[in-house]
Length: 215
Image (cartoon, helix red, strand yellow):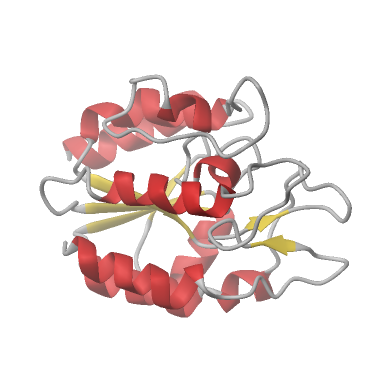
């Protein structure tokens, strides 16, 4: 994996793009936009730096791509890294570091991010994690909330996902949840299904991950 190629793709296709949300289905580009009510003035810059730190932590090309749904407000929304909370970035528990972008005195923590890295830390740098929808989807008037993406919203980012996969050339691709599975099916990428680690799915997620890496 060429880090610069991935970074160039991000800058060209995500960092500078408008969110394209609507009043009924708002979308927040966490790598370009800021909400001064809940985050630091340079929040977007912080999140880009955190994502860069994650990418340069790879000492070898990852052979597995894990695709999730979309940034959660307690996790990637403020950290910039999928399935990662800003609290984890400062905990020295990850193979990379970063800084919080929120205004919260105590950095946000996310249950699914905690479970994810508890299982996945041993497999770094053999995998890369990304979301089929790279921006934060939230309910109208509630920036600290999550909502499920529509098929149209997922489809909007399929060209980026396809381009990312073409650059990575992973041996295996895994989908965390039905949205990610739908996205990968839509671009004809065979994907191994994984249970989402939240809402009681921790054990099944861990079993699925071990199966992928031990087979």
